[in-house]
Image (cartoon, rainbow, N blue to C red; front, side):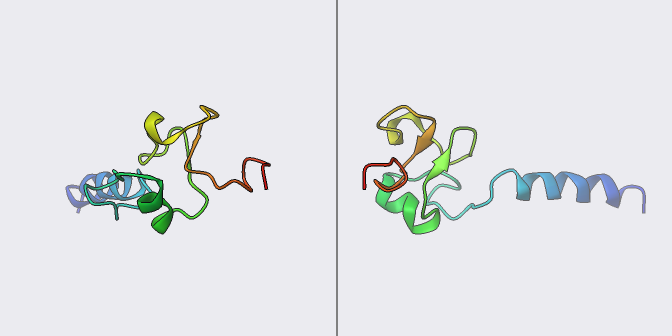
Length: 72
């Protein structure tokens, strides 16, 4: 039983490292349209799907909607 617990702990860490692994290549999305199909409000820096290419205003949040930016 002791050998199973460390494996289970690693498995839990891998599964929870990203709240979604539904992108075409794990947690990578080609563009904001694709990302928003899974993460409606975009993703913050530090999230596995975050990429600077998807953060147009460099505010640390990729693919947020205009309403999220305060622009209406």
